[in-house]
Length: 330
Ligand code: UDP
Ligand code: MN
Image 1 (cartoon, protein in one colour):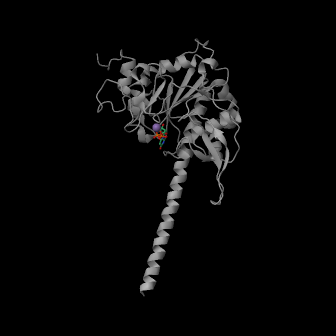
Image 2 (cartoon, protein in one colour; image 1 turned 30 degrees about the horizontal axis):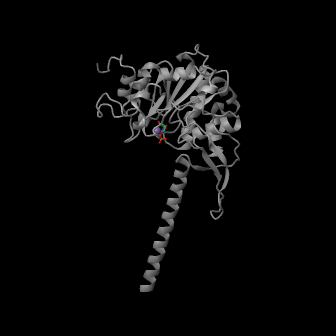
Image 3 (tube, protein in one colour; image 1 turned 60 degrees about the horizontal axis):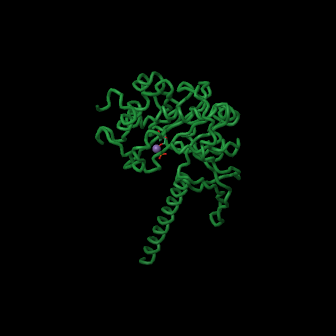
């Protein structure tokens, strides 16, 4: 009897252990894909080269005729963030680009729609952080840009502050009639792509590396390049591409542009995401930067409003850069 009980207990323990191992492996796999730079599953061999880092050599600096009206700024958001993240944007940088900025979300919100003069688009994509749903929103952003007929598409996340005038002067360095993919690598290393064999005993085989602009810092694409992407990405084809290569939306964008179209990314160091330590950005360089981010315990060190009123520091940053706004302390 005692032996049977011990045997049963052992079976239960082994089963539990095995199950937790499975769950652990599952989550490792997920994190594996999301942590950057990381190693991700791929079903192809890559042939991309390193991005170009010296933008001064690339940009012609000759396009002063580009104005804010030539830029389509899309911000990816979700109904989960309508009350928490959007107010920080609507009360700060959005005030400098009301006509040019569009919000892509997954639910209706009449108040926000009114506030943004109809610039809140319900993509009808699902409201999760899963790859397919983020790809769905990106795909809609891209289609709206194409329809807008504008010369530049710049994507940002809803936890970005965009220094709008600086974004414009940066884009004026480039000709939108040429192919430009401007972005910032998440951690200054490429994503390494592996083929993960089905039987876990075999070692994954390296398939190459891919440089891509992280959407959390901002990515800009010229009209010429966006038009070349049409056969592969318009009308929802971008979603199919994400699904078939099983990569997140910004990495899929890098794959499409660098690998399939052969256009290397130009690194714009003035783009920033919360993957960097925000407080390490010195005050004296803030004016020259294009985008910023924030996350829990990771905000800019900028003087201004107190932290309970301005936890993201976006209002303080906005007043630091553009003190003439009425709500800024005098
Ligand atoms: N996002 C979304 N649906 C979700 C979660 C996130 O559309 O369910 C958007 C979010 O609004 C943001 C971007 O995806 O623009 C990145 O999300 P988040 O900043 O929460 O996560 P991160 O990838 O930066 O860790
Ligand atoms: Mn984020």
